[in-house]
Length: 585
Image 1 (tube, one colour):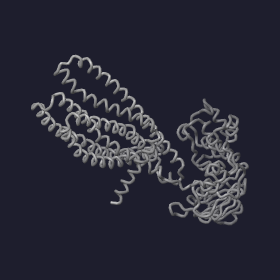
Image 2 (cartoon, helix red, strand yellow):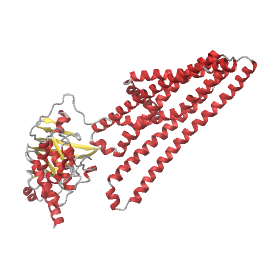
Image 3 (spheres, rainbow, N blue to C red):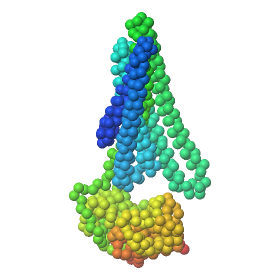
Image 4 (cartoon, rainbow, N blue to C red):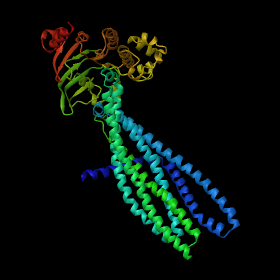
């Protein structure tokens, strides 16, 4: 019971929030509504003119009215067409602008959420929110709301005509309306339920598509195409079932309205025909009434499917605002200061970190001097990457503090903190853009000379110049047109151009072959010069010349020192070294 109450409360909030977006376009909305009222008035006038056309022209044979009424009807339709164009254009402008704003808000908000959010939400699901769900809301705002307003005005105008012509007949006609409301409401609720399930199924399908398309090499390597086909077919079948249930509900609404309308018209023809036969009403009055009633039936009939579209839109809006209402746990303080761009030292003071109630780091105490190269080693899952991710505040510490030149990272602006940090990861992340734009990502104002210098220092200049378009070569999705070593060197050039004083190298050479690793290692040496560097490495041969090596086991620092010192301890580092030596022997 409480759950249903919460759902209704959420719906009312969604209505208000969408209305707040609509209010931003109030002037265009006002003009559009005036055009709608004019369309409704002229539609009602069309029905109103049926009486003089029949009574004056066909029964009284009035020649003067024969000349005037056709001209009046032509003018009426010209004005109605102009007003219809005005309301259609303006309401679509309002709807499209709302959808653009909503989509921009959603994308911008997702970009501001922490890494933990992306770990909990599949990429395909987030894509479905921005593309599919927003499109459904677009259908509600641009089409359903517009039609609902227009039809409402038309209904009011035509009701005026039928009551003016014969209020008794009108009362008989509108007795059908209350009976029509009940199925409309019930059908709307069911449509909304199945619409929510359809949207969830589409999001699940989008996630599967993203996984299989990005992992197509593995799919083909293991000959798993039939398995992936089966998984995809299961999801399309599930979506098909939900959509057909929604179609069944929608399809039932129209016959119900037809039946109720037929019952109402049957009584009206019987009672109205009786009045014309007995002479208490004229044929013109009756046919004017019938014309208005028939015109009235169309917009009333459209209300049911419009309500279905609105319910679908509300279901999508709830899913969108679920994301927009997700707060980031990485919050910038109002009095945060700018971190000056200079050489920095980093101090970890009693740092502990939990992720989903699991303690990942325990009581880390570490002081790194400006320009020092620190290597972090240990078995996978020990907490090395988590430790360096705390520096740019991808996560916040659970206990303790991280200090940069005496400033707690939570006391400085997030933008200035991250501008002081350069990162090169194990998996080279490139965008489907030119080599130039990938290198300048993070330093968009870089000159051509700066780009060339960074490419040379990263040992990327020669191979980029071998391409026909040189720096303007499109690298493809995830840099698919480049080799692993080439991609990594582009990433190093990007970090060089960023020129950040703190550098994080997260297993930057672990996925490369020996030849590529040597080229990348030379580029990394250029990158590390004069920077405070944290190197996470699996291959101990790449970190033996570090100023200090930190051994992390189960989230705790267990050893610290230079390569020779740690080997002499015959502890954890020595074990790792022996395992690698045995593997390579």
